[in-house]
Figure 1 (tube, one colour):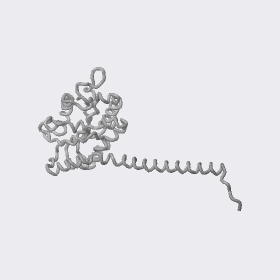
Figure 2: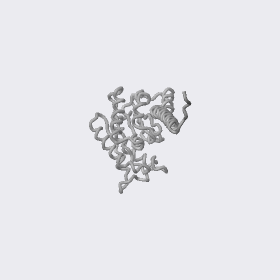
Figure 3: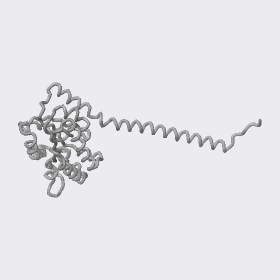
Figure 4: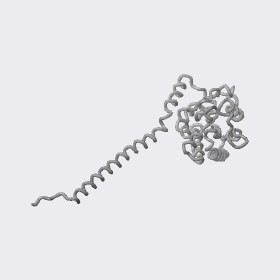
Length: 246
């Protein structure tokens, strides 16, 4: 047979084949990396607070909280409330705020840091970080309802109070979303037995409708003592209603 000479057409086909192989390899790499990122994203919410939750459990083994008290759960506004127990004298308080958590993360850990204490009342502050991370007001309302359903699956008589999302100067862009979420959760709470919303949003606004700077620390996100004093005034009647002398 005569020798076949490689022409321009063959070279073009070879180049095209090599380009297709490079493209296919790139797609496979992106799929592999993307799968890893997605798997990490799915794991992260369940794992990022594990050390804090385990620390709570270790403390419980050393000094188990008595049943019938009040659990305060939620994000950093609860976690950083260093005077919480002494601010409500005569009330047995279990403080279980962790990191910059979201409502659904409290739901995830309720079996470990709420149910075992068999409280009379659970007070939650969360939703602020949820909105900042892209959750919608309707999703926040749904997440709060899911949390209450979770704790009442084991504690059907437990009362629940949700501290409304505060208007932080650092998150002034979320004011409308916070207002909507507060409205939705309030409407839901009116349909639920022994559940209510503690409105801290309204009194934390200045006359111009913007967040009051005097209630916050330097980061303009976390409250100073004046901010907590306002919260104490709003929360105390709820404790008196649901957990007197707890």
